[in-house]
Length: 87
Image 1: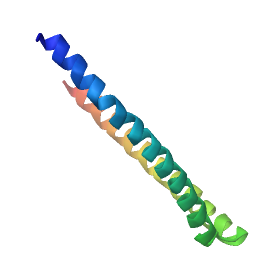
Image 2: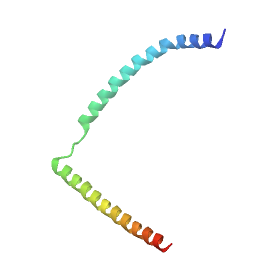
Image 3: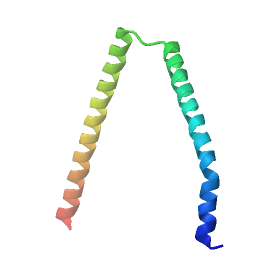
Image 4: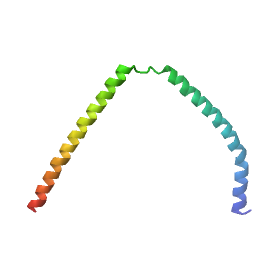
């Protein structure tokens, strides 16, 4: 037998296994979504005040970090410009 004949036989033998796996995968997917739904029911969702406080904190920290990065960028640029002028 040639290599292609052996490969074709191997593929044919594996086909039923693939069909069995797909049925199991469908069952696993259904189970996964049921578990996700159950988990969402267990979550303690934050109230509006908590969301507002945390959102405000994130925005303030982001603005501060942006300002620090911009300042560092400006200082480094000035330093590099001075080094280039000297050389």
